Image 1 (cartoon, rainbow, N blue to C red):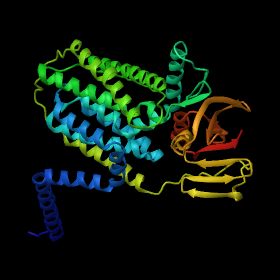
Image 2 (tube, helix red, strand yellow):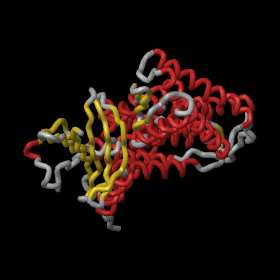
Image 3 (spheres, rainbow, N blue to C red):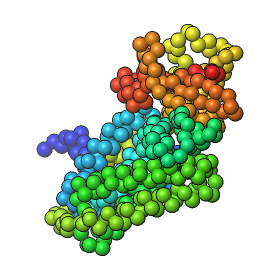
Image 4 (tube, rainbow, N blue to C red):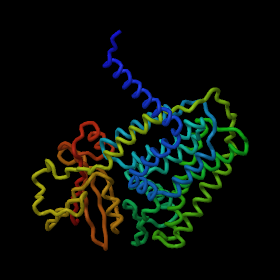
Length: 433
C-alpha cells in the first residue's frame, strides 16, 4: 500500500500549527488578566501628555470624582456599557478628526469606567456627572461663555444697586460711581465655585444614599443638579453685589473671603437644607447572571489606541493656507507654532488656532473688556470688543474662519471642520480708538 508522504507531511505541519495555536490560546487564557493590565498600562503610557494635560487642569476634582465613582457605585440593570461605548466612539471620532486632546482624555476616563462596570456591574450616575464636569471639555465650553456670563451678572447687579446707591452707568463689567470706576475681575465668573458647588452636591447625594441605604433615580439627580446651578447663579450675583458695595473688586484677602462666604451662605447651606426634600427610594438590585464581557473592552481599546496614535502625530493647522491677500504675511512673524502676528502702524493682527476666544488672552495680559457684541460687516457677523489698559482704549474685531467664510460660534466652525476637514483659524484685528 503506497503512502502519500506529502499528505502526511502536510498533516504533521497542520497538527504542529494547531498545537501552537492551542498553546498560545491557553497562555492567553491563563494570563489574560496580566495581559489586560499590561495593555491598559501601555495605552495610558503612550497618552502620558494627554493625561498630564487633563490632570494638570483640575487634579483634585478629577481624582475626587474617580474616588466618588468607586465609593458610590451600585448595581444597576441599565446596560451602561452600550452608553459608554457609544460616547467613547463619538468622542474618539471627533478627537481623531480635530486632534482634540480634551475629548481624548475624557474617553480614557470613560474607558476606566467601562472596565469597572464590566467586572463589577456597578455604576454611579452622580460621580459620572462629576467626571464630565471636571473634564477639560467642560472648561473649553465654559471659556466660550465666560464674557457673556460675567456681563449678564454685572448688568443684573447694576439694575438692582442703582436704586440703592449712586451708580452713574455700566459699561460691560465696569461700574461708574461718582466718576470712580469699579471693575469686576475675571474670578467673578465663578467657574471654580460652579464646579465646587456641583461636586459638593454630588457628595451630599452620595452621603444621603449611604445613610438611607437606597439610591436616587436619574430624574432626582438631574433635578438636584439644576438646583445647584441656580444656587450658583444666586451666589455669584450676591458676590458681585457685595464686592461692588464694599468697593473691593481686585484680588486680595477680603475679595476671596467674600467669595467663600457667599459660597457657604448661598450654595452650601441651601443645599444641605434642600437635600432633605430629596429622598432616595431605589433599593440596590441583584443583577442575575451578570458576566464580564471582554469583547466590548477589546473593541474600545482598539479605538482608543488608533486615536492615540493620531493624537501623537504632528498637528498641521495650515493657518496661512488660502489666506486673504489683504493680510501681508511678509510683514508678519511666527510667535509660536499656533500664532502668527502682523504688526502695522495702526493695527495689530493675530492669526491663530481656534482654541479659545482672544478675550481670554487680552484679560490675561491685563486688558479690561468693557464691551463685547456681534456686529454685521459686509453681511457677515463678527465680534466687536472695546477694551482698555493703562487708560488707553482699543477696539478689537475677531472671528473664526473656515473655507473663506466667517463664523462667530466656536461650535459651528468646529462642526464645519469636522464635516469637511478644512483648515480653520481665528483672526483678531486690534487698533486704538
